[in-house]
Image (tube, rainbow, N blue to C red; front, side, top):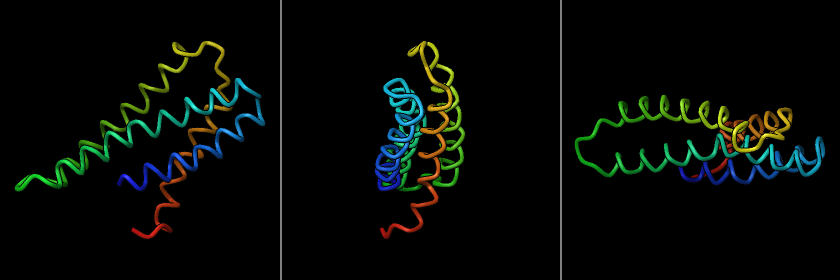
Length: 113
């Protein structure tokens, strides 16, 4: 799971470049916030799953589904907070960063573990 988060960080750099091409410096910052709204919840989810995996007798399936729900709620909450943190946000660049980073999950199948 941590490898997927690292892959998301690498792919987020592509989103930052695209955001910069769309809206300059403001686009890079906005794309970074969009990418962070995906990466931070994924990191928390990965750390939580690795902690549950080490505990004997823990329900991995329950931790997975509850973790996915929390990850989704955190992502939505972080996107809602973007406007408060950065009032000059460029929403197109936020979507670029968000979508590019989310697509890294599909690339994770190509990476060997």
